[in-house]
Image 1 (tube, one colour):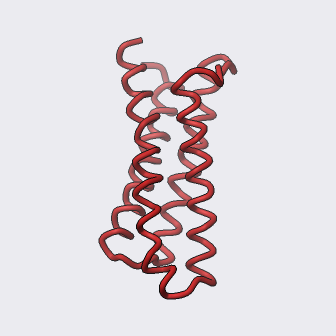
Image 2: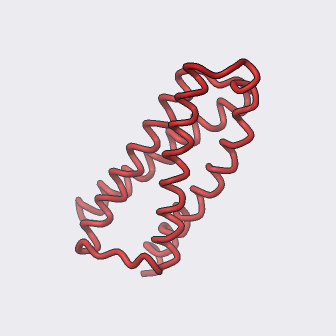
Length: 126
């Protein structure tokens, strides 16, 4: 395995770890805490970094009509909206918003898993 491939897969896996940690700990606590927000942002940043590294490996070519690229873009945008919303709720949201936030988190996480495991499958099968 090449160094750029190891780097990109490591970054994407760190995104999985941080994002999963944020989503599941927030869901279990049923209350949005500042460190959950930090985990969401770390997951997003690692995902963007890993995606850019994968983009370089692909020679700067992405086919937007490709299912993996399309689901990856949807997941990234949802993660961004999720992190921004979490930041707002943690800073200025009501207690009701902080306790109800977990409902949306799981949805975004499940959508995010599609390109994660899809990319893993593509990588293993060529």
